[in-house]
Length: 483
Image (tube, rainbow, N blue to C red):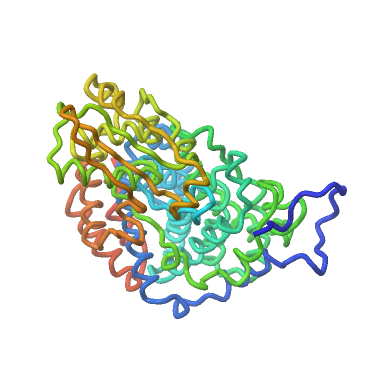
C-alpha cells in the first residue's frame, strides 16, 4: 500500500486541509466522543478487563524495580502531594505524576501487553501501560466509576493501536518507539473521554499531546524505555487538563503536513485508520498479547518453543552443545543485546532468555537481575546460542508471521531437537486464560512481597470492574499503608 501524506519538495503550508486531505483528527475525536459502552462487544470488554488486571499486577514489581524506585524518589522530592495512588507504594501524588510513576512501573519489567505489528511491518505498541496509567490516575482523582474507567480505557487503547497501524513504517525504522508516540495519543484520548469532552476538545487535546510525542529505540535496554510509557501517561493528563483551561492546538494534528504522522515518520496510510476504529476492535482483530515472560514479546515465540523442547525431551544443560535460533532481521535488530551484562540489557537479549530457559526451565522475574545475568553458568549458556536471521524473501516464500522463529537444540551426542513456531504464549493463537492472568498477578504480588489478601481483593474487583462504584476501591488494595 502506498503511504499518503508523504514528504514533497514544496514548502510547508499553513495548517489547513485541502479537499483531498482525509479528516483523520476529526474522525478519531468523534470516535472518542461517540463510543458508548453498548458499542463494545462483550468479548472485547472481557479482554479489556483481563488486560487491566494484567497491567495492575505487573505494576507491583515495577514499583520496586530500579527505574520505578528512582522515579518514585524523584517525584516524592518534588513535594507535589495529591489524590492519585502510586501503585505498590504509600505515595499519593497529583494525577499527572502518579500516572508518570505508574506507567513507568507497568512497563519497567517489560511484562505488560503488546499489540504486534501486522505481518510485513515492524515491532508493536504497548497500549495498556500508558492508557491505563493515565485514566486510572485521572479517574481516581475524580472518584470515577469502574464502568467509566473501562470505557475510557477501551477508547484509548483502540486509538493507540489504530494510530500505530496507520503510521508509516519509517516511524519505526527511523528509531521512534510507538509506545511513546501512539501510546501518548491513546492516553490523551482516554483522559479526554473520561473528562466528557466534545469533539473539538478531544481534537485540541490530541494536538497538545502530539507536540510532546517522542521516545527513541536507542534507549531500549535502559531505564528510559519504561519511562516512555510513564511520560505518555503523564502527557495524556497534562494535555487534557490544559485543554480544559483553554489551551489551543491544531485541530488537524494527525493529517497536517507538519503534523504528527508527517513529522514523526514520513506520512500515514489512510486505509489503516479511517473506518477502522472499533471495526473490529483491536482486542479481537490481531489481538493484544499478554506476556508469559517479563521481556520483549518479539522473542516470546522462540522462548515458547525453547521451553517446550526442554520439557518434552527432558534436556539437561550439561547435555547441550549448541542452541540455534533464527528470526527476522527486525527481531534481531530490536533484541539488540547479544552479550548482555545487566538486567535491562537481558530484557532485550534473546540469547539470555533461551539460556535461562535451558538452565531454569523458567524465565521470570527472579531471573532478571544483574547478579543472575552475570553468573558464570548463565554467561556460558549464552555463549552456546547461535543467533542468525532469515531474509525477507525467505519470510515471504515460507509465509512467516511477523514473529516466526526457528529453534534447534543440538546435544553433545549429536541428537537435534527443534522446529518452527509462529506465535508465542499469550497471543491470540495461544492466549493466557483468565486464571493464568490471575496467577500472574499472584506471582507479581509474591515477588513484590505484597499482601496476598490485598492482591486477591484487587483481582476480584477488576474482574467485575463495570460494577465498581469508585475506582478508589481498587487503588486502595494496591496502595501501601502510609507511614
